[in-house]
Length: 252
Image (cartoon, rainbow, N blue to C red; front, side, top):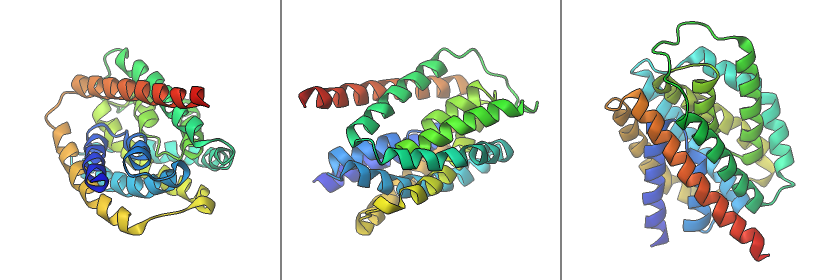
């Protein structure tokens, strides 16, 4: 019963990932921990493989509509790569509950920032300053390694708010960054790698199929609708993560 619930929820994760360009790890880690009983640190490594592979496929699906800003995405990843390793090393000294609590806090902050953003530009042809790419890439890279996430829920707001990339382009670009960050963070977590490969195979297929559906849904929504959906989803899930993990801390 728990397996089928996990498959259903992972399919929901794939749908959100393809639709919003984020939310992969922030959904997958709790699903693995709470629905499938995977230990928190093991769930992080598991999610990096599942989400990273799904995001890579999603990026190429978005590319069919010319929505991936490859140059900005790769620069974003490269500037964050060194700090990704640092974050992964430091995370070994932090409890799983604290890591999940930090998930929720960061989700709430990024969701609120997106919700109150002014109307975006219709084009991203003007080249942005290199400093926003360096700063945003470094911060997201560190958090991706520290929290063991692909970073999509931070990448999308960073691309939209700091680099002024339209959200539909940011969605596909974020999936590229997620795939790269996931691969790098997985290497940083290699010492605690514990993967149930049978379970991985059972979950990857529904995740990929749902991601395809999510990508297709972006073609029917406006940029404003996408931004609002992203913001509300991230804020609500962030509140859930904070309250549930604060409860665990106070019980101790």
